[in-house]
Amino acid sequence: QVQLVESGGGLVQAGGSLRLSCAASGSDFSINVMAWYRQAPGKQRELVATVNSGDSTNYADSVKGRFTISRDNAKNTIYLQMNSLKPEDTAVYYCNALVFVRNSGAYSRYWGQGTQVTVSA
Image 1 (cartoon, helix red, strand yellow):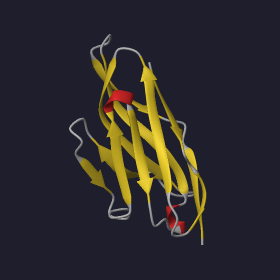
Image 2 (image 1 turned 180 degrees about the horizontal axis):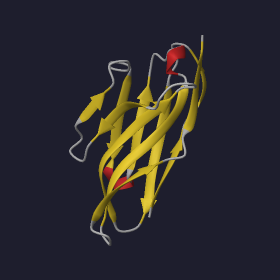
Image 3 (image 1 turned 30 degrees about the horizontal axis):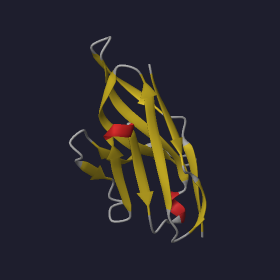
Image 4 (image 1 turned 45 degrees about the horizontal axis):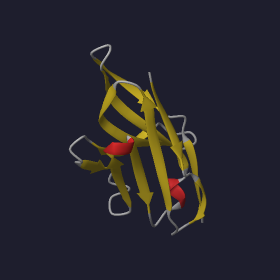
């Protein structure tokens, strides 16, 4: 079993910055792709950014140039640096990981509990 714990959400004014963290813990696993998703009230969950084991990254068009995803493999942690925040970035942000669990020999996908980001105008 793998647990993902997010931190770093909060309230910020438009134009401000926040940094989210997501730490993975458990035993006997390796992480393939990690990602950040977000879900605003009344909307579907959407992909924000991904980073794979080779540190290749992808971003939603709406956050390109403002958000940066990064990964610390030694700590099994990913980060999302969010700059130039806009009110439309307000959402619950979820960490997601595609994990290879060695004792089962299978890939599984895990979610964190979510962290609220609120951007005021």
